[in-house]
Image (cartoon, rainbow over all chains, first blue to last red; front, side):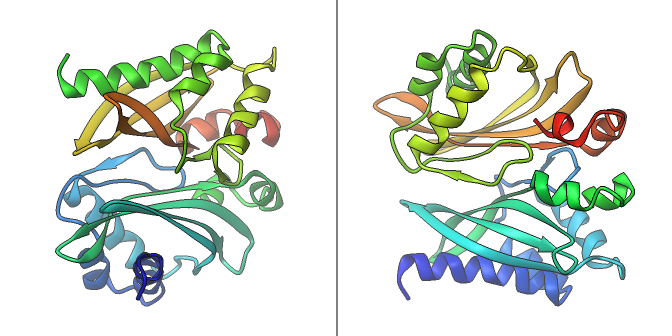
Length: 136
Length: 136
């Protein structure tokens, strides 16, 4: 595969791990160190233990909304690259702008940073929901 | 200065350009290419023209809230590094989790990515505000 295909495949694997609630897969996607994560509405999480703990809780939540990635764009610079995409949450009741940053480690793209933030129009669409629901 | 001091100084310069509404300074802080930006509530902006246009509008807005960075943490990996901080908006009526990603170009840290997203507790605190105000 070409470089952009590779990193886009790594991005798709992240969302596949989400869709299948596969914590082991999610844990292998994240790099071993130098990692940060900002879930929507959360303060930043720094380091693998805090980040994996958050995914264990999110993936273990039976009421977790489905997340569908759309419009993924890859930008690669040396051994780092980011994928920007739009996350449709819960059948697109609202949308997030997501940045997924990867680093090439032993030939594989591993995630070093994830941040997803609400896009205003979609947040307004969901404004009848309680605030906690809107941001989780 | 040490490496972390350098990149923290670049991060401080970003907020200083904001505070002084200095578009020329802001434009020099951003790298020449490979740049992305997600303002709170906005979809992703890709490329220098779209990003600088957004800052021209934001810095030219006389009603733009003041932004104060707090709790900055630097993480450097080779010639790239990120600073994670909390942005207090409008005398801390609410707060954003911000990621500012820099690349070393000719010895200077230039910004390649910015993303700021509302932190839930602060958003709830500001929930009496109209949605557009809350996210801009």
